[in-house]
Length: 132
Image (cartoon, rainbow, N blue to C red; front, side):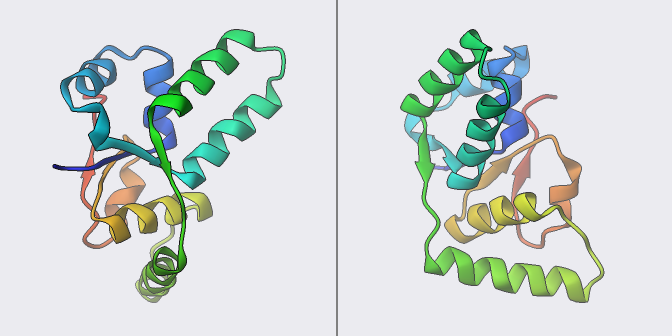
């Protein structure tokens, strides 16, 4: 079964009920969806910035109960080191957290679901945009 790692922007689209993203999430088996622990951290950071946004807190917490947040490990860290060095040698730039998420998806062989085209710079990373 294909594994789809949802990037933070895709989770945001889902929370905002983007029709195409919502449709794709419903169309795939729930067990095939995951997020990186990095994305979980970004989501929790967003909640910490908006303590009074009760609905947002409820929706994000419900989402986190239903989708596996996969942990980082030493093998993922090794993949990150290699990817970052390769990109640096090629003069390619990706934000720090995005690079961590990309390495996580690459290490696991997951499809990274994002509408951020910057991820396409990462060699061998399979990217899908579910907003289209």
